[in-house]
Image (tube, rainbow, N blue to C red; front, side, top):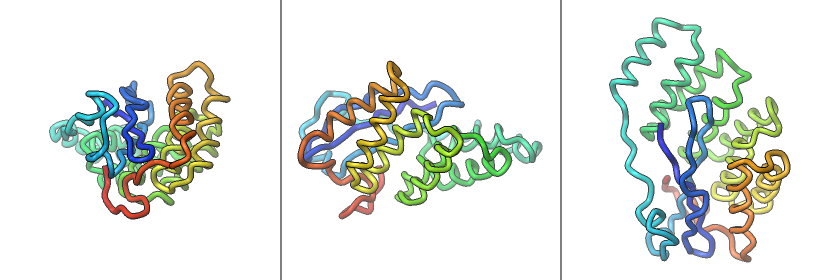
Length: 211
């Protein structure tokens, strides 16, 4: 399981915000990691932020074992979600999307898998589809903290919609007080108090690159 660090950029400056976000288990949806395009030229907020996240390692053996299990168990949504996780953690997002979608086809009420799928769409620069999937997750559980946290990140870095991001993060703080998600949401809210918005995120205006 990967340990993703979320890094915000405001006015071209890197903030080591939401660092060390730990995805606790297979059942906990991932949190997207927006890295501004201007980061390379910006002063680092911390050593960890300047070094960036570690290079992903794709577990080929695990993927092969899970693909075999998926073929043997055509009605097993969980094994498909696990396989999608392996591809996601290896940053092979097209394959992750394929398997998250397959899992949801069998278990359409799984908001965790739906939110993971939204994160994978985000990394493919398909921000509208990511937000539509977030809406699907919230239709299942409108107070799902990680879903709301991701919604804010996608709005801020994918759509340059700071007002929308603010609303999402405020919901996290209101509905999940005292949680790690609420602490991260507060950091995001502090970051966007500055008049200038986030520097270009992956695929935002003026950029076609991904993290």
